[in-house]
Length: 182
Image 1 (cartoon, one colour):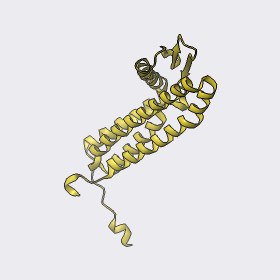
Image 2 (image 1 turned 135 degrees about the vertical axis):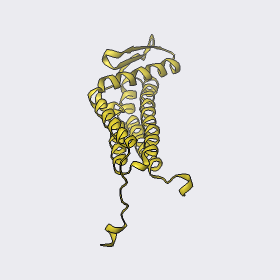
Image 3 (image 1 turned 60 degrees about the vertical axis):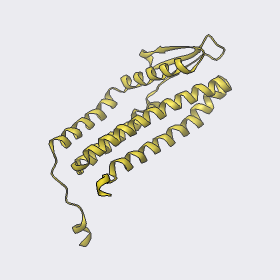
Image 4 (image 1 turned 90 degrees about the horizontal axis):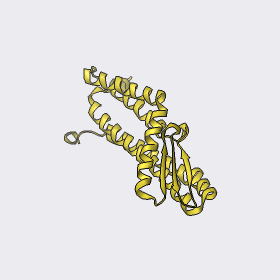
């Protein structure tokens, strides 16, 4: 069959590629096992951003993966980073896909790792934007309406669109040919 003859012959794996695959799989496992630690880090980042961007007091409760904001105002509120709201489960598929790509095509290890770093950073920043959007809507529309619109509609749109954009960015950066081959 002509199609089978036209497929690229996989190159032998290099020690660097094998190490990259092992590290990516280990990071994926660590995200699942250490999800609580990851969520705590996300809320720590969110509390730092909120301290810079809001007028009311901010309190971080790391043992609960929660941040309380607007303290001392009429709109005091607390947000808890639940397992389904973390960016970890958007980063996780990127790690697994990156490991598979490197295992199948060791020659693109560097491109995949750079693309993975950029896409993972984008996902984390998008999730922080989602938290800030939620905080802004609670401040603007009040606790009940702001939380409803920020969590169910606008926050979900930010996550879905940002996650999709990060996935497209990852695919584009990791599969494009090097500049000298274009």
